[in-house]
Image (cartoon, rainbow, N blue to C red; front, side, top):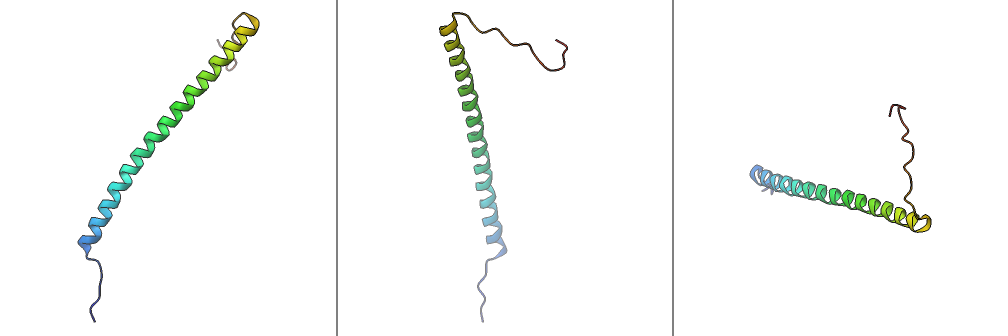
Length: 74
């Protein structure tokens, strides 16, 4: 009876191709997460800007900065 199986060379080629595809996917995914974080930062800054503009429109002055809290050594 003749057995049908993959040869060692075929298995190594398939594993190599899968490793290359996984590396490409991983690098691409990191780029998307970086873009997502940057978009979130830009959105937060725009929200702060809009809040300051609304405050200025209502009161006619800019808000004063709060006292910095933390170690106490300013």
